Each structure stands twice: as C-alpha cells, then as structure tokens.
Image 1 (cartoon, one colour):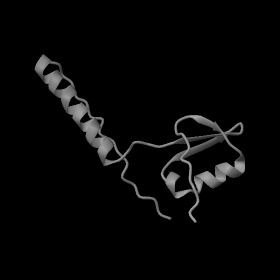
Image 2 (cartoon, helix red, strand yellow; image 1 turned 180 degrees about the vertical axis):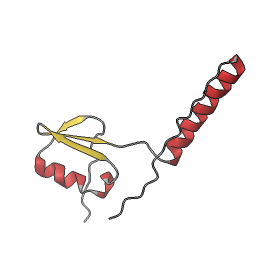
Image 3 (cartoon, one colour; image 1 turned 90 degrees about the vertical axis):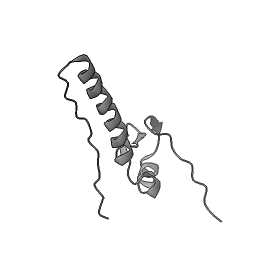
Image 4 (cartoon, one colour; image 1 turned 120 degrees about the vertical axis):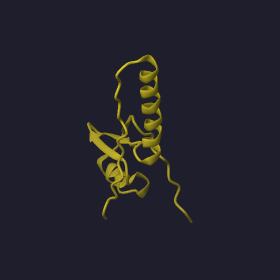
Length: 89
C-alpha cells in the first residue's frame, strides 16, 4: 500500500515541528528547494531558475532593447542569468 503524500504550500510560513522539518527536506520532492526553519515554522521556496526561466527573461530583455532602439535611447539591458548547476549526491 502506498503512503499518501501531501504537498506543503511554498513561499509561506507553516507551523511545523523540527522532526517534520527534517523529514520534509529529505523528501525528493523538495530536493531543489530552499528550506528555512524559524520559531517552530517551516518555509519552502521553489526557485524558478533554469532554461525556461532564462528564456522568459531573454524575451523581456529583447523587447526592452527594441523599445529603446525605436525611441532612440541608449539602452543596454542584459538580465539573462540562469542556474544550470547539477548537484552531486
């Protein structure tokens, strides 16, 4: 019989015991998440980095630069930063 897993809300503080916090951060579902524990509360942040996020930012950068060119502004915007690091376990 499989165990039912409940996905915790992200980007908000949730009441949690220390043992539950340790159990949660060891879960493969939250492998790439940033986890915090403070005053008997847990916070999990899922970071939107990677190639898809970088592509979205790239479109915005191109549009801002094209707008600057059309208006005659000297705009140089380059925000395309993304994380491609693979963790070693």
